[in-house]
Length: 212
Image 1 (cartoon, rainbow, N blue to C red):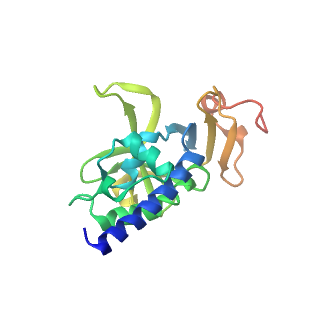
Image 2: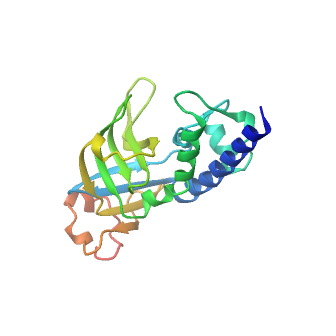
Image 3: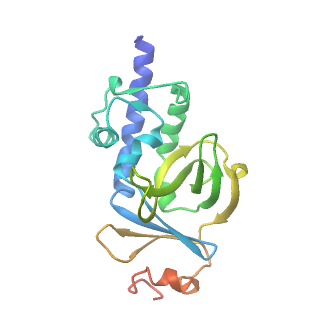
């Protein structure tokens, strides 16, 4: 490998490692409830999904890739690129990954039925700069694992035209994995009120929250 290519890889790795720390601090270990259009979805950001969001291919298993990224231990020979995932695309995705925390605590849009070249994702979370594509959580046999969605892909393109519908996110709530009900308001659309939420949403929220 030329010195220039190795340096580019090292810069990319540093960006991925910074993004992994944000992912760990703000997202891993929690459930998130997104309310839109009087509907809701629950989302879990798993450790093993982080690698797929970076776009890089790796000699490491997804879980180990995440752990090494968090610990600052990724090496140049741990990652490689392909025609489907070239360096330039991975670098672009990694730079946007630094903003991934926005999808759990900022103004967002929900995209419904977003179609890419290879897959149709039921939902997507976008802040106009990046889109996290979501799908149902299934095991190897295709059986549903819970009723939440997981992060499958990060897109660095305008996905509005690829989606059947778009909705403004009204609320984002969070809870730790061990909690039964959502106990934290991460985002609330201006002038909206918890009291206006549908009954099925209110039943998921801790009654100690303000206005409940």
